[in-house]
Amino acid sequence: MAPLIQFDLSLSCHDDVIDQRKTGIAPLHETIFTSPRCVSFGAVVTTYEHTSWVDYTAEEIEASWFDRDDMRRMKENAKSEAKLVESGLLVESKDVSIRGLESRARTGIRRKRQNRMNAYAAIFFEVDCQEEEGFFNEELIADAYFVYSEPCHVSAQMIGKRDEIEAMDILLESKKTDFFGTNFCKTIVDLSTNEGLASSAA
Image (tube, rainbow, N blue to C red; front, side, top):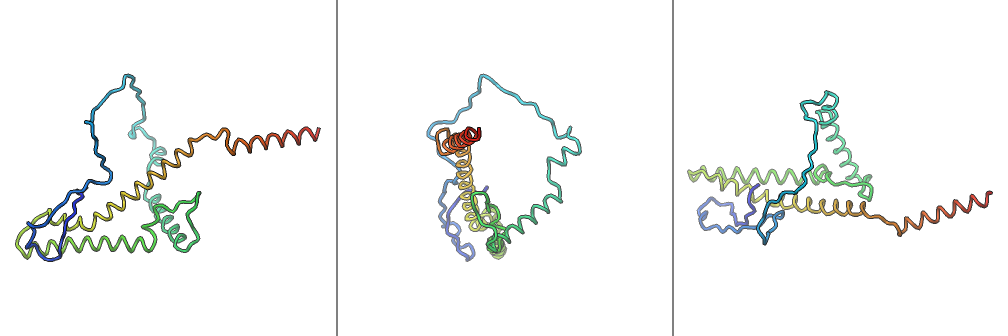
């Protein structure tokens, strides 16, 4: 992963390479610890035995990994679902998630293609400038690419963080036990109704 660096990059050749300012920015996923890190070992160690993939039968291997047909089928499903999202027939709801179909939709495909073209153009422009100037610097080529890859990287990290928060919310919601909430009241009503019907029928 390239370091997150902000700098001004003009499209002219490198007359002012030395004068460029570079400012370091901490990546989104890093946290600063005030106390030093340490390693500790638990008193009780639990070990789990598992079967090596070498010992799998042909049926187990087929059930464990995707083959080319599975991959092709998944891609076709993603394309068809993206078309349904674009047409408005598939909408996000509590039971349906369209997460992951963004890059399969027409706008997502266009945006991804444009990002790649910008990155390629920046790299080739940098290489051409270096050939004209008669030098070769891999770091400057990486920096030219980084200008266009960094926004994609930050966007992916933000999406991942949002997914993490949603997953934690779902996990916490599933762990909640609602003994005296609405579900409990519904159970009491249903039981009393059933008992009342049974006693009236007798």
